[in-house]
Length: 265
Image (cartoon, rainbow, N blue to C red; front, side):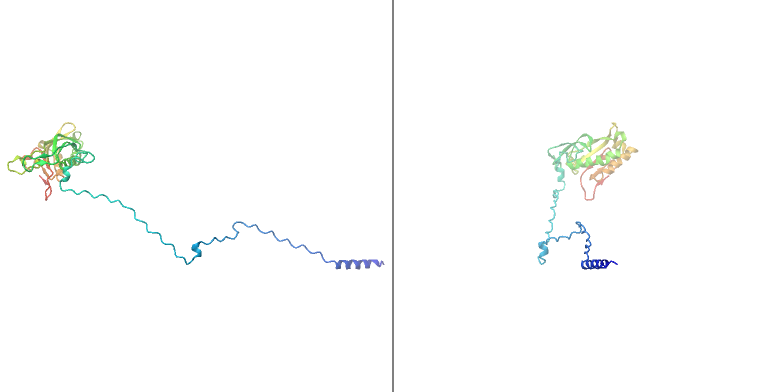
């Protein structure tokens, strides 16, 4: 038996036991995760003076808003009753302030007897757009009332009959006289420029609706009665064939005013 073999084995075992075991490499730690912007710690915003001085007085409230300036409409001019009759021309240039009136202002008309005369008369040739058979001298209130009667009554009531209303036949206007020309009677409203007499409505085809012939007839009579009724209220006095023997052939309109209201017959 070879004695060297055990000795070599013993020597090899001694050598192996004497050397320290090789150190194991430490396990590698996982790489750190990448941080995103959302993972970053929030930066504290710098404190404002109001935050640092907790005992500071609160800010003063805003001053109350000033109310907007409101324009006050001018006060309507105060006039004496009847004063508006003395303004024949409006700032626009329309006769008596009515664009449907045509004519011209006249100088003051003095009365030859007490109670007559017109302070600011106008000479009317068209009223409500309808031609007058003769120029009528009136005050502005009467001229405007006549124009309104044409617009609100004559035109719609006549309608398309005979092509429509085209003119008015004027029987009387300003005249310095007494009522019905009777001696000793009161001065007529004609003598103050406040009255006009209408005897017929002229139509576009040349025919006429006359008070004398039409009042008692069928369709013409109905038209005339409606016109008579429509005048009552705007005019202070309305007289027709059924009032007296002086008005059988015309309507008398005037702008006199009565405490009891309009007088219509």
